[in-house]
Length: 331
Length: 203
Ligand SMILES: [Zn+2]
Image (cartoon, rainbow over all chains, first blue to last red; front, top):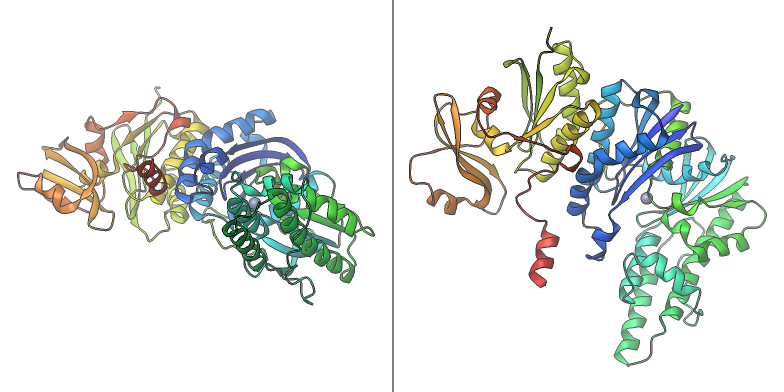
């Protein structure tokens, strides 16, 4: 079955065609990152305006690159949340028009489910499976006992990992988005500040990053006041080591407790090389998988893949009343 | 037999979702439903119902007229996105019309000031003259202080803040603009975003 995936939850307009939840025929991503860079972060109203501007063109490129006609599509899967509401609504309504125009079943897909199923584009997910979802908006551990069966084990109590990265990047006056730059500089620095590892020993699977973020910001402020030389590389490395220690330790403990067959990491921060390396070192008894770099950030191929397995499991489609939900829950 | 024309009207820039179907110059069906922040939910079910009542599908349409604002940002984006997708998928032309013109067309005659509230004593407004079913623009669409705009009007006028558009009046007017490239179509917001405004002010 060919699934047309549609994703517009933040600042990427993306449409993809994926066969049987595995084979990517096309994955067109119209990124607005250059536009939001000038503002140091995503401006929701600008994001919505850009989605309207690009929407029909992205659909056209995706169907052409796949070498198909809309009549060949068996399911339209669209991100219906969570995300920026104004952005979500553009993708949802465009997807509805395609479904209505060709009489194709329509299915709303949770954005995080999409990130998780990005892994399925590489190799089939095996269950039980532990998914660590780390992005600009999310930090959570989910246990999956089968397709589209998510049990949330824990999540961040405050900032998402990606959010903390971007804020630290801003304090260090690194270009937006800060995450990838912090990761890059980390490789050249040392963990000289030994920041706290928040909640690393708490018995649950929750996370907290706002205290750590404040710690980094305060130290930077105090050193600036004292005219001390700031080695950005060391700041980045110290912050990244603290973050990845917590993520890896908690994931390792959950993997053991639930006896999973594999660990998958998903979301934008799954592209972080420091996290990739440390996770591989920390968890050695079960395989740890990451999506290909191009499927870590927001894209519609992952939504199409997730939509396929959701539809195979439930067989139930949504109707034309489908709406975007900025705070949609995964289960 | 020549193919008959079936024109779909779409506007979502006001509190109401507006849809109409004109077949060979005759208004065959329309719906104007007020909603609270739920145009995104209702518009396609309403369109589906309307087409089914007429035994038509989206593929039968020959062209589209879409209200491109000004008005509610989120609202107008829904209508424009839908129009773009229908136009693109079926290879049919789109014409745009001011959402304020659509609103004004609901009035029978006289000097008409369409009004869409924009908060803080501002509104999206314009001015049209309607005479014997013919509608002519007097003032451009603006986002302005309400009292300041009213002060510019020298003759008696009527404010229209709600009403079902008269699409035949619109079709007879010269208020329609063809869209050369559907993919490039964007709403008329009449205002840059706050972020852009602040950035320009700082520069
Ligand atoms: Zn994401």
